[in-house]
Amino acid sequence: MALVKTGDTKRATQIARELLKVDPEFTISGFLSRIPFPVESMSATCRETLRAAGVPD
Image (cartoon, rainbow, N blue to C red; front, side):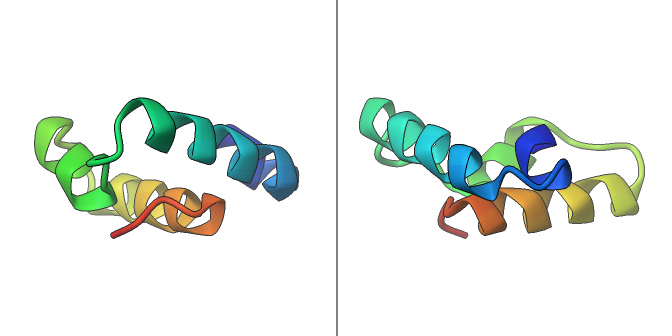
């Protein structure tokens, strides 16, 4: 997420691909269901940045 926020989307995408090789079932919704954020804006930022990196919804 930090890489997307700092503008390094290319590297973020590479890491997302590596993550999906290790855990092909990883999704944004699954992640957010396991890690509940106390503030909606935090989960929205998480969702947006993971999506920008190529993680499936």
